[in-house]
Image (cartoon, rainbow, N blue to C red; front, side, top):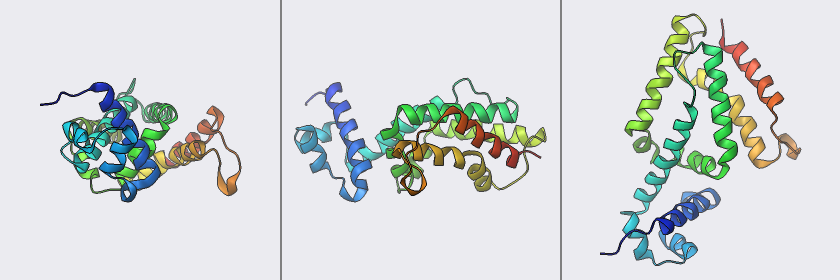
Length: 197
């Protein structure tokens, strides 16, 4: 039986992320991945059962790193505004340091693989932390009651729009764009104003 080569495994993961971002799931295949890595297709099956296994492992790895980063120096018991700002800072730092991985995670989030990845223990723990944070904010009258989808859109939508502009290097109409701390604070203040009673 052939052994796993960690350097080769890292190369496979990196090339898979690049291909998923560039070509989406329609253009992604094990044959193309093997060719990009200069290995045989059989070698891929040392690391992964099949294409779905590969995608889910990559999604879990990126998701785990993202969610660990998101809760760094964060507590669900923080006052709402302070905790939300910490969330913005952590999410922005991860997205700016890992643009390709974040783009890949976005593709995976809009696929059938999402539910299996989100059901993992680590990601379930993250959901519980965030649920506690929101519940505490509601109990402390720091947050206007609203549906989860509306909350998420108002609380994080502006940040992710700015991060997408930053990743693409342009905003509406193709205008050059680079996210600054001042812009992020401006958007944050507007979001908090809409969320607080």
